[in-house]
Amino acid sequence: MRGTAHCPHHACPVGRATLYVQLGLVAARCDGSNVKVRATSPQITEVKSATANEVGRGERTSEDPGGRCRVIERDGHPTLVSGNSPNIGLRVVRGLKVDKAGRKRYPKQTIFLDGVFDGAPFLDNEARHYSLDHHEGCVRSFTLATCEQAAVMLLNGLPLREGEWTLLVNEPDLDAVLSAWVLMNHADLLLDDAKMLGNVMPLIRLEGLIDAHGLGKEVLSGLSPDILEATKRDIQVLRQGELALKQSGKWAEADWVEHAREVLHAIDRIAMPRTYLKALLDMQEVARVSLQGGRFAVLMDSKQGIYEVEAQLKARHGDQLAMIVLTQGSGRFTVRQVNSFLPQDLTALYRRLNRKDPKAKGKNKWGGAGEIGGSPRDGGTGLSGREILDAVEQVYGPQTGWLVRAWRWLLRKLRGSGRPALPSG
Image 1 (cartoon, rainbow, N blue to C red):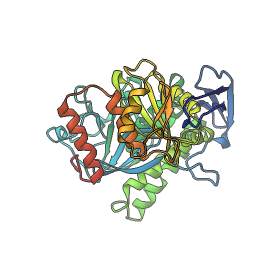
Image 2 (cartoon, rainbow, N blue to C red):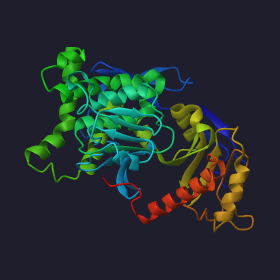
Image 3 (cartoon, helix red, strand yellow):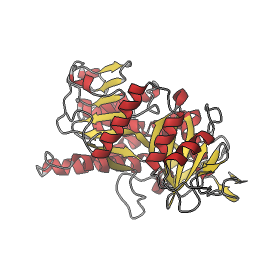
Image 4 (cartoon, helix red, strand yellow):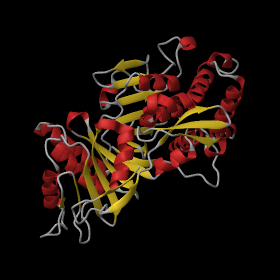
């Protein structure tokens, strides 16, 4: 989509410019030699083809676009987050077991994966605690493996866009890491009537069968012989690091967080067309905060223009996207109010930011129109992206009492100090 746009605010990097909107593509079908790819936006109706060499099959190549996952410290713990769903964090805690009493110490929206919870799998919608598992308290022979349970939860509407989620794994075998990948990539997998989920289901189904029943029961997958053999090769690639470490006797002392990160990247290369993956890498979400009405604001790091970023995010998140904070480098930011029906427009945010920003003085301050604006022109802002997003949450976030606001302030301080605010397991 091509068009022109003009922002009246002097600091907005859009100005009068030509915009090229490259909306994401979703893989619809793979027959081993050709991948059918369908556009996610209703404005793009052409169905394009990507040859097999455009789809990474797990192993690195010289054209590898790199990985989306990074390790951050969250609540005092190393946590893996994706640049396209930073509200979902994966913690790999060696040998972690949580019993019924112990899970009360964990925050809402925690998912215990593949044996972390010491008991039968469960769904607690009040606490938004879930155990996806097939080890204890169930009949293993006809209970889905954890990765398949994760796919079912997506289709059942698990609200992963709402707030911050924690995934817990106590050993990063392929079933556990594939489960985490499914949950962390929920937005892409469910686009366009879950076409990408359908594309990756052979991998999920076969790995689930092998993890639950061992080898020899592949007929239960229902896969055609050619797809079955191709999927077996994918699983071999995904497990080669784990098997090498186990064969050398180094698995127990290996860096499991780094191993999980490598496997997540390898699944990306298998499950996503290279062009699609590159588009995701070009548009990284740094952080999110919840706003009123179940919507959210997102802090973005991208070289693309604000309207281009907006179009791609709306294709992924729909009406739940309410506001974008886009960093342009050198302390310059653009703020875009996507939802026109928030209780206040950006004027309220400019006032708060100008009070907080040490560089906002005189006429050199935050400002712009009611739905788009930016940071001071001369020297940019003295605030970090996270501080700007915190201001967005303070102005447009859910209305809460003073006790909740104090608790959130304390959590932010604890995160900044590196002190653990959650049980370590």
